[in-house]
Amino acid sequence: MDALKSNAFVGLFILLSTIYGNAQHQTKRPFRDLSKDSIGVSTPFYSGLKAYHAFRIPTIIKSNTALIAFAEGRKNSTSDFGDIDLTYRRSLNNGATWEELKILYDLDTLAVQNPVPIYVASENKIVLLFNTTSLSEHDVLHTDYPKNRERKAYLTMSTDDGLTWRSPKEITQQVKRNHWRWHAIGPVHGIELKHESSRGRLVAPVAISIEKGNEAYCMALIYSDDQGENWNIGAVDTNLTDAVRSNETTIVELTDGRIYVNTRDHLGGSKLKNRGETYSVDGGLSFTKPIIESDNFPSPIVQSALLRWAEERKEGENSILFSTPSDREKRVDLMIMVSYDESESWTPFIKVHDGHSAYSDMVKLDKTTLGVIYETDDYQKIRFRSIKMD
Image (tube, rainbow, N blue to C red):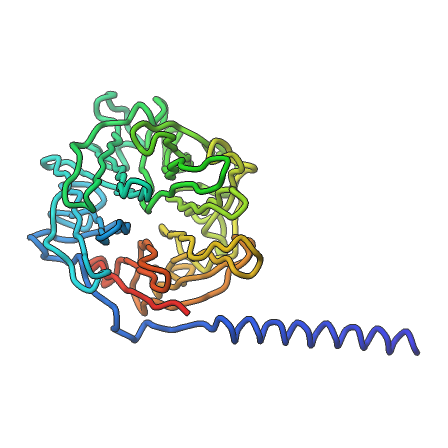
């Protein structure tokens, strides 16, 4: 009887401790629904702006004095292929208003795609990677084509807060192996590593395919050790036997120097697992283990974004954000999730938008303000929301 009482007491203590701990956690960091609140919302890209049919694939970066939003300006349709320009708009008041739309690169009637900005703080420099193509995704995956028609990768930079840009330089041979067919950088911001072992290295994800067919999707990391001037291929996922067909990927550096990799599962490994996860411990040169399915995220098959919000290098004070639509089957209800334990677990944090919402990116505007850019209204608008963080 004494043993039973003792066990019962221990069980009750654990239960109450768990409830109390969870209550404290929820009280300190409550879920916020901002989807009905229009405060802090602007629309940098919308159908009809400068005669573009639609804008897609938004990314965003903050320099010393400007917030710069990039998007694919699609001339005639919302299609992923066709006459597509790389466009951008600057804001000097953290997204409240936007300067006139500018075209960064126009390749006549061909497609310019996948803007991936990286901010180098020491030089107030924005490094921008992107792709061009003369072939549709279907043709790249399923047909034979000459080398001069492969998807190409380019690099440009700005050191004056996005006012002017260096003439784009092709870097295809630096970041693409000959047998890779599909090659799509990002599309989301890349990162500059801060940890001592790889300090200053720039890293960006890239979606690739290594055989014919749409079941050969994989992903890789590319990196630069000279602040973006030259690039190399780092870690490569070549596993076609697992459940994850990794595609569009987002990354963040952890406090111990590892890179956390979170990727879209292009084919949807299972009903509850549309994303994959892995890590790199050597600054993006290799992966620690094969990509595994994850049920941590209520996401459909879609691009998502990671952002380091706080890094205090002590337990309970760190936070990483993850933006994603929050329905497992549809691109709707954009939500931000948060991890306080360096990607081990994730919690719903902020509902950003109610209804259709797809690709997104995030940026830290200042110590207390988050910026989120995202597709909405059936790809007719790209909205931006600034959020005051508690």
